[in-house]
Image (cartoon, rainbow over all chains, first blue to last red; front, side):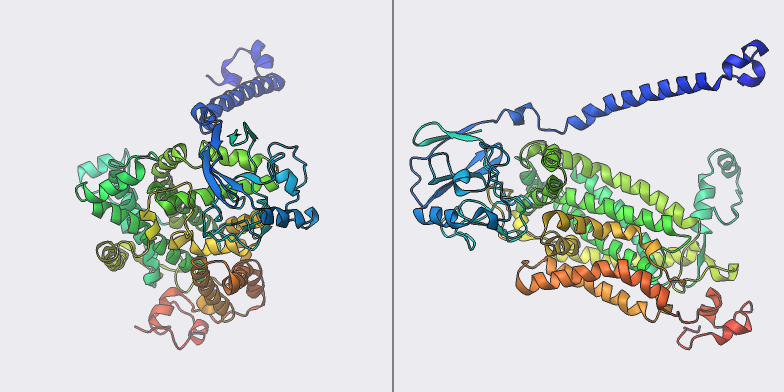
Length: 201
Length: 431
């Protein structure tokens, strides 16, 4: 507390004024305070991440028996719309006819396949069920819901989906073809539980 | 701060306070006796108007928060409850809603005023930077406040704008997605998102108030700029703030408040979008998402650029570039009134901002998309090319010798030298 240079007895002067000793105390105290600050800050930041109740809404089972070819349904999974389209033969052929090299995003974006799987129609459609397409119905640009599910919706130039917000167009395999969106519509983890039931998540 | 204190406590209690916490001295020196250039025009009244708007928004906001329910299920209904059931709820909510528009109107005029008269130039760089910071905080606060209504436009505005951060996936894969989920508190915009926006919407106005104090402090160190852009040279160039500018600011505030009240009482929804009276629906995006009018120019810039990442970079850059204006402008004179070439570029920039606002309200197709790109290009070229180059090339017109000379003419101003009298311009107002 007191002025160390004048109030301390002479024999302690060398000890008190040793700069390396001060530096060690300074660095140790400062480092300890920084660690404490970081530990204190983490709960304040991490509390914003999805909580246990959000994480628990993991799976949804959907009955597809009433969805005819050419029809589509939208279901909710983790608060997101899931597009399920029963594709027509024409839509499948159109999607297959496009070479992968011509696509803006050449990755399948399929959570059921490796990250580097190419965006072929087979890698986008259901496994062994190429007439089914299951996707997260959120535009990869800024998160709008593309049009193309309901009868009479605009489907864009590629028989797929059209995002009304900024004009992104997806083809009949949900791949980005035109507009500002950087990626194909994402495919969630899912599996067919039976001929007419699909389990998402 | 810069001028010597002329406060003299007369009564015993004033002397007692003055030796302990001299708040009366501060108020007297900074807001009553403060020497202010005598030639300030009505464009200088928006600082006072903005202070009034901040107080108005905080006052109405605090009482609205007493009735608002920040949950995805309750938010929209509670806003309707405020409108229909709460005593004077319609008035409080419309005043707050229209108030946001009026706040931005005044802030934009205030910013263009500073830009025209070179109020950002030395020694006022920090003052300008604090102003841009306030604008940035206002943008964040207004955005969060708009989301609280939880109508269709609210919901989809939050969705689109928070998704902007997912563009970071193009830099480090996965980072953007993690960041967006952290902001949302889930896998989509929902109740956890709404409650945090509400918490921060309540906090930010007080942060703004803090930066406003620094902004006024930074103003009172060099003192006001003025329409001629030349420095105050003698006490004859200034008048005390009170009564001269308390009256002038007060009169302008009355006119502004008349417009404000006119909108609140006769056209409260004129500036809003009808779709925000539809409750939020996460399964259906409105055909046409548009932000409030005060964000339209920035929205046009976002959509003008065909890449997601660079669209976002341009959107953020459109504000961030303002921080660098003090160093981008190379001109020797402050006021655009004396800059024959720059003047044209300046007004072209004002027109650009208005046109971008219009384009932001249209679908980004065909001619609108092309125009959006042209005007976005000019927006940035104005700052990055015109400001440095024109200031360097241009020969400014002759400046008046002093502020008093610009007001009274050189004959009436004994301090004015003969040389500056010769430089006097014919169109200067003579009293």
